[in-house]
Length: 487
Ligand code: GLN
Image (cartoon, rainbow, N blue to C red; front, side, top):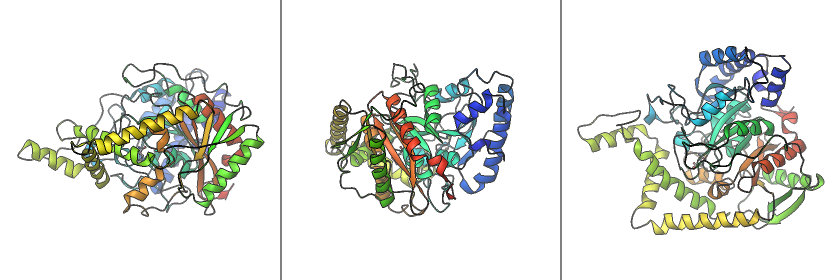
């Protein structure tokens, strides 16, 4: 292995443009790294070896300056459709399904010169926070093999963290890009709701779902976001305006930004390593010249309940299409109802069944107002409160998760403790705001700790500028490497 697979997107682009390396060398290094490291990690469900090499060779004949993501290998979460290639969503129920089309994001990556290297493991249908709810096996955290990589985009985060690929796509419905990014020591960005087209993303909870990048640094996330974002006539919820320019202002610094820290975190207890990183970040931003503020953050106690009611309600409806007739698995029976029951019983895992039952329950006639209606009211309150806060400040800084990566198996029998990993990530989904996790420090056990920034709707430019400013203060990538503690 030459180490090219572990370089950042920006580093690779600069090497290409100086003529020092060709895409085929980078793709071959990714494949070597996957062959060696993924035996333990389990991050990939499929690797597109031949296609990726062929694509790299073809790009090698082009001018490296011709496209914004020229020769960048990208792994794609397996709930994003890739034409003619299995797209499993981490579920047995999609066995044998091969989408007849590419998702918009896959088309845009390819047009920008990126090379799709394969599909990554995930919690079934995106439901989970540890990647343990995948039908195709667990993923190990590259910083400690006994720990979870987070979820549901655990395969994508682990692939980047282990230096198997410079970047990956994940999806974030309630934190599934940011939480695994934090657990694995990489950067993960979820844009404003509608910033990136959902066309070709298998739906979990349509009013929250967003695709976004995971990369080793902020610049990588900005480059990917810039290539992926923008209107799309095939997704009615895609934002009609273009994404703001993200790269030119990236290094504008923290000075002049108003960054707020919540007055209190709804009584949730923080792991000491997370509290220390948050303290350090608060001090660092004032030294760097930004004006720190304290704000009262609404909904810290209610967002998690509201999110799980709405997300499961939407999931129960979205997953009704997997019935043995149209897609994937089919378990025959002597009646139509029997076919549905047998297929869904065999095809869905326990957690997905739990979500469908909960979602159906909160939508049922006698309980709709009490649960679903109430959750929508909480969502509205949180959205309005955040709109008000962002009329006064630029960025909000808070933990990504209450603690660093937990051990594999530790929360499997306790769904509520699994859901609680999402307390700090779900508010941005409820309010549809752009949010990002960047790696900030290490716990005493050598596990990464991330910090989260949230911006007002449509302000990915401020979000990335703030993230880049903090990244320069933390210097995480320069200081630490997986498994080795201090670099
Ligand atoms: N952990 C959350 C859930 O299980 C978030 C999932 C996601 O963002 N896809 O619902």
